[in-house]
Amino acid sequence: MLFISAGLPLLILVLVASGAGVFASTAHQRTQLRDPVMRIAQQEPQPRLSTLDLSIDTPLIASSRRGADCQADITIIGVHEAGQVTPSHASARLFASGSVCTSLDHGMRIRTQARLSFAAFGSRPVWVSDPTNTGIIRAPRPARALANRMRHEFAAITARLSDQGRILVPGLTCGLLGQDYIGPGVVEQPDATYATRVEQEFRTSGIMHLMAVSGGHFILVAQLALWIGAAVHLPRPAAAVGVMAAYQGLALLVYPSDSVLRAQIMGTLSAIGMVVGRPPQTTSTLAWTTLIVLSADPGKSSSYGYALSSAAVLGITLCASPLQRWLERALPHGVSQAIAATLSAQILTLPIQILMEPQIPLLSLLANLIVAPFVGWATITGLIALLLAPVAPTLAYAAAWLASCGTAIMAWTAHVCATPAWTSLAWPAGIPGALLALAVPAAFVLLPVVIRLSTGIIGEHANRLNHVQPVPESGRQPWHHPAPAGCGQSSHSHARQHEFGHSALSGRPWRAHGKMRTWLAETRAMIDDEWHDSRPSCTARR
Image (cartoon, rainbow, N blue to C red; front, side, top):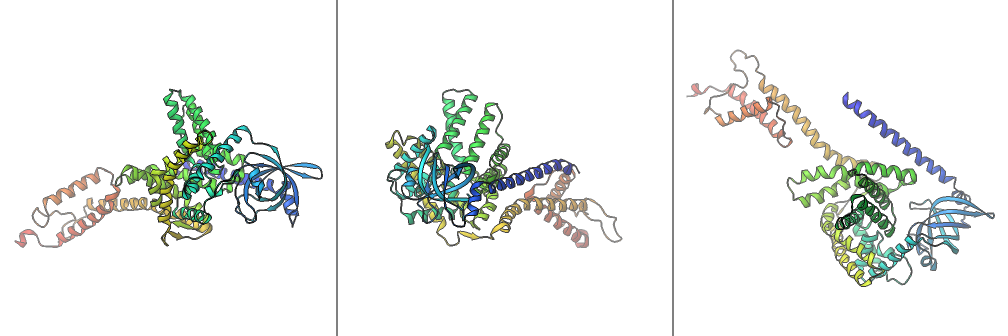
């Protein structure tokens, strides 16, 4: 009853929060359906040219759709109809070709004539295709313009690396693979066939997450900012402000994604806690971050990227420490830490990955263990190259080359772990497959608990049987009648039985790894007692 009374308020809060989330998501979808952009897309069986005002939310990258050269995520802010401008807030994806791709950039506001249609795939509900008569309403703001310039200079420097470096160094540093870059100037692209093979090998081996900017990048930047603050003896509030500034700068430089948004908000909240002297609380910070994100943009509730990022953080927070302590009984500290972090992240992200792609990379743990020592310094040298690209190209190239040495090991690991035909396990698709993927690790976690409880109950019952003396029947000795030392039983075994009985009566807790063995020993002792009672006495044998 105490457990029920304590857990009932928490259950009510969870249900209320879930209901509020469903309500917000439904309201967001209904609001989107009333947007003028959605109305135009519904009314036109054949897309016609519409004059639109757009805000470009991401850098332009290689198109995922045939018939276009580049794409970018945008927000439609106005629709021109009958001489009037109707405000809009519709999220869309822009597809363009030719010189339009090199004339546009992240942060611009443009006016163009384009065709609207519902999206056939992707996270954005609307496609904006074939833009013509494009004009720039507003250039990127100074901070965004500087970040765009640094990104373009960095792409020019990484284009001088080997093929794997051209592909992986931008991906590890900015979250954008080299073959996907679109920008001004002539940048030599890597071989398309090789790039496709490398990307597929990273996915198959289970290390594709390294090519996305996440909390690891923000942790490295925060550690660097704190190190600088300690070197110049900054007070804690000033150092925390420096960490927040580093977070915002990193978010400007990398490719915007849901994982970057989650890490940026979580890091900012943690830095605010540092200012006021509060210790970091990852689970609480993640909860507040999710509340803020979903309140500002309920559409993130259907984002696989945000779900994967949040699930990985939650899994590491809840499971990494106990799993590492258990692994350290048999493994070195560094190995156990790497295994615990990888398994903890996969416990909660695996069901989401099954919804995206119904297969399990069997060598993911091995691949992550191999590349773990090289991820940190390859990321740091890549970020150094990104920062130095506009001002010191030679030093930037040296740093990028060092980063490519680390990515070369990652490329080799991905190739080795993705080559065998059995490296991926086919899995049921959809919701049943996701639930099964969640049930398998849950069973492994709960199995020791079940064994511990069951063996404990059996052991306690055996203790009661061992220490309760039944009324002797005629012609029969009672249980636990000890045989004399030297008559089929040693004094040492008597001492062990006495020690065990004393520890059980005194309430000493049982150890999990010995409960089954103890239960078997008790059963053997009862059988031996029955056998001793039924055989002739030592005197008679003599």
